[in-house]
Image (tube, rainbow, N blue to C red):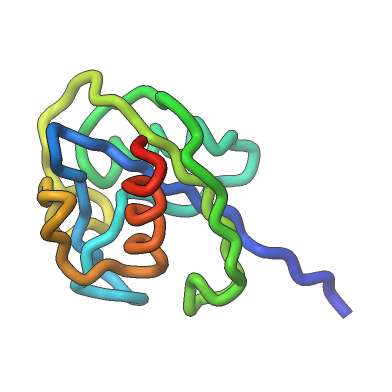
Length: 133
């Protein structure tokens, strides 16, 4: 019997004034829902490199990692199976905001007026507000 392991993902939190950058998911799961930019870590890639790559692919923005926000590992957080997400706060460096890759749209939302979010991203953003990141 094959050994089952969780998959590793990354999510980026980019804040601008009192707003957070979100992407509208183009594909299931949670198609049409808003989410933090992010995705699966590729084999041989660090989580830091993955979050930088995902930001360019989904938003067109070059960023730098400021700090680790947390690790989210609830086995039911993703309907596709057990995923562990490493979440980073990132800082804008350059680039034009444009929806790319599997993002249907990308936009800043007031952190106090968020749309319904995919996965456990509401919890992630709530945790950030509690600790004042």
